[in-house]
Length: 349
Image (tube, rainbow, N blue to C red):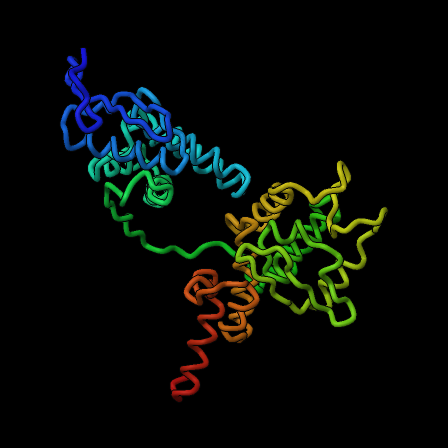
């Protein structure tokens, strides 16, 4: 049984506070699930803010962590890649919802988030995986802040420090063997050329799959990346060996796309080259060279050739040069040459 509502709140016989208010002729009421007045007032203000902003007010309950995840997925399904959506959904399903799914998201504490991180480590997974889970947690709660549900994050958990390990790329000494193996493994010529494009132009997988003929300037051998992650077009010189591979592809029909699928004429789906790339890397023992590591291969090959890092930054389309440096992996052979050159210069060789 409720006593009379005072300032929008009344205490139920169960000990929890319920809220009730009217806005533009519409009544909003429900349980705050809070047993203390301070928390109940915060919930009431959140509900009023949601109503003022035209956001859905969950009548009868406080918006939980599960509700927050569902809303993020719904509002981002057309604005982020399916890989990103899947990553968020998987982390939420496996780690966040089982732990705090039923809790009001504004009541999640630093200790609760730390417990989620520790649960990842207790399963024997890598610290990098725990940090990825933390990034998804921060992404969801930052959305709540941006949406006006929260004034600030209710927790603060620092990511784990991880010793950086060299990541796999295709070294310059193995590049010819790599391309020859690709030609042997790939039956579809589009796969052969797309992998060359990612190495020769440093394009992201989505940028390579979505290449258009109209963005080529064939006489000047340039390509303008017209749909990039940073929303800024960049003009790239196309090396002759790569231009030749692109122009030699058979063109069975007129298409705006450089790599149209035979199924529907649209660009190939993500991971189109993944299986061939995995077989080639296993055959040559190159390690886990993913599609994105081919972009890092492009950066590293240019760095070894002496290309200024600012030029590499421009070709990759990075706004921050620190991001570019993450992509540059120096091979042991390059380091040895640098050591030998210094020794010679010092008269010690």
